[in-house]
Amino acid sequence: MRKSIISVAAFLAFATTAMAQVEQPHQITIQGTGLVTKDTNLDSSSQRGTKSGGLLVGYSYQFNRWAGVEGNYGYTRNTQEYFGSLGQSSIQADVHELTGSFVAHIPVPAARIRPYALAGAGALVFDPANAAISGAGRQTKATFVYGGGVNFDLTHNFGLRAEYRGLVYKIPDFTVNSLSLDKVTHLAQPSVGFFFRF
Image (cartoon, rainbow, N blue to C red; front, top):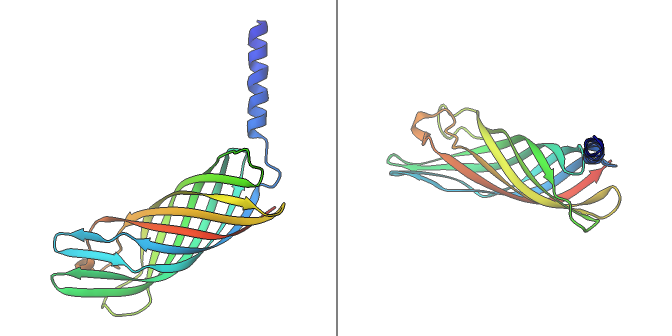
């Protein structure tokens, strides 16, 4: 009986410590990003997105020492290029990124360094910025996002962030059948920026 009481007390003490809120659970981030899309080939057709730079803003909430959630909005403009038997086509598009992720915080012995890993899902909205191809329209693609990074605390509330995100999604065709490859591609998104905690 005594062992059971000690075990339950130890479990409750551990659970309480693990679930205790952090001192500053809210964080807002602003990052500059680079975007590099993997080239895709299918038979005699291929597709690629031009390299571009963009902006990524986010809000995160840390539940405890180990776990949190984060929501992000990103923006860039690039050109989707398609090559096939009928020649080359390209569509310049504004790309809006909306994602939500679970964030696993990785405790380390350094007080001002906070590494983390993330995984989640969201959407990429491809909005044509020109009318080079007749019938091209806005298109939304579901995406899986994964990655990780490090927050470097410069002060109690402010610091720098370095991050890598990978996004996996189906290639956009802008609702134009002749551009459809029905293939999945990968977007690499390294970024650096700063954060504010409160």
